[in-house]
Length: 219
Image (cartoon, rainbow, N blue to C red; front, top):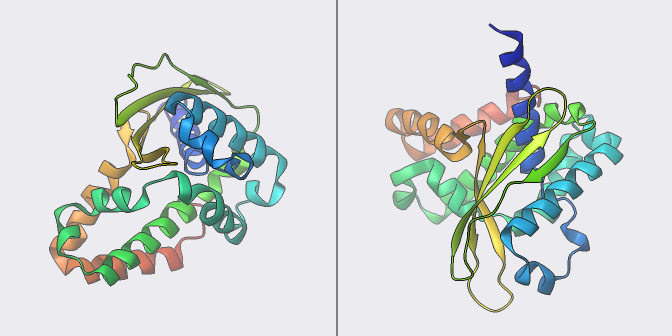
């Protein structure tokens, strides 16, 4: 396989790892600011801040799962509609799942994402994020924000789908990510559907739990 393709895939994995941790600096954002912030400005600020945070924290760069998980729970989840992300990945079977099954699916899916991509964080070095021209209007409730992550080699496309949270104090939340033309949720939906068809919702939960126990963050 062409070395350039391999390098782009490796960089794409790094980009996705950074994207999944893009909310690392939200502790410094007042709720009112987050609510009023345009979606492209939000993505630009948080993406830049998280890269700087990773560069400065050796334990995160080394793939310390416990440190990363604390970061995810405290800083990232408030900026992601993770229920929608998980429901989309699970597909139609989500509606038949019990509340307890839905909770377990969200927990295992989050752990899967963190463990799968944590190993790429040690590659963070000189990357920068550029937001491409944003096409949206004030009345939009769902938008697409396109960015490029630049570092060694060719730039990598990274796109975010966000939704507007209703109500006072609501802001924009991410519910899907696209790296190199591949949507994260769509990728997992295919995998999850195979498991659900074979073993049902409980089978998918058990498979995710087993995979998480065996995943050292480097796969």
